[in-house]
Amino acid sequence: YNLNLGMPVDMCEANHGATDCRSGDRFMFKAHLTDHINCIQSLLAELTQIEALGLRLRQTVARGGIIFVCGNGGSAADAQHFAAEVVGRLQTERRALAAVALTTDTSILTALANDYGYEAVFARQVEALARSGDALIGLSTSGNSTNVLSAVAAAEAKGLSTFALTGAGGGKLSEVVANTVKVPSRNTQRIQEAHIFILHCWATVIEQLALEPTAKSDG
Image 1 (cartoon, rainbow, N blue to C red):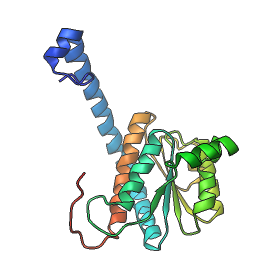
Image 2 (image 1 turned 90 degrees about the vertical axis):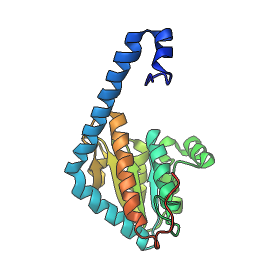
Image 3 (image 1 turned 120 degrees about the vertical axis):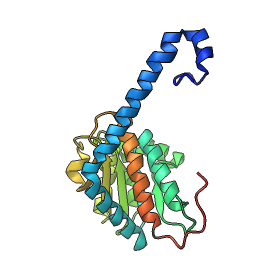
């Protein structure tokens, strides 16, 4: 199969030529895969921090707190992915646990962006919904997303614990959030792949609050 075009190699050759379909795409895929593996392996240097923050998030939920999550673009999708697995289930059948992605209500998002500016779309929701004892996870590959920084400021003003996932360097987020994991990469794709890996690990730790497992997740 041609990895870019999703068609059998012989069909691809008829349309695009053998060289493009055999050599270039396979090299591209191997390069991406190698880069991905190296990035994930580099997280071993952040293992202590990742594990410690997962346990802190678990404690937040155990005390009845809610985990709020926010980010932009692919990070918004990751925020929703994580919240869905906490509220629903990851691997075990259990009681519902509390997480909210601040990226999902289009009426709120567009109203806030229109009335207050895009930098306020998450912070205003934190002001309205969050309480002391809750937690906020801010996702930003650059660490400089203005609306995520504003959400962190609003969260800390209300007594929330704040967490951040960023790329190499950490940006401004790492300067204001002590609980930051900085993925050692400057490639946005690799950073996002590492972020969802970390979020899956955290969801697994949180899920340990569950009752006796009775069924495995369907997907």
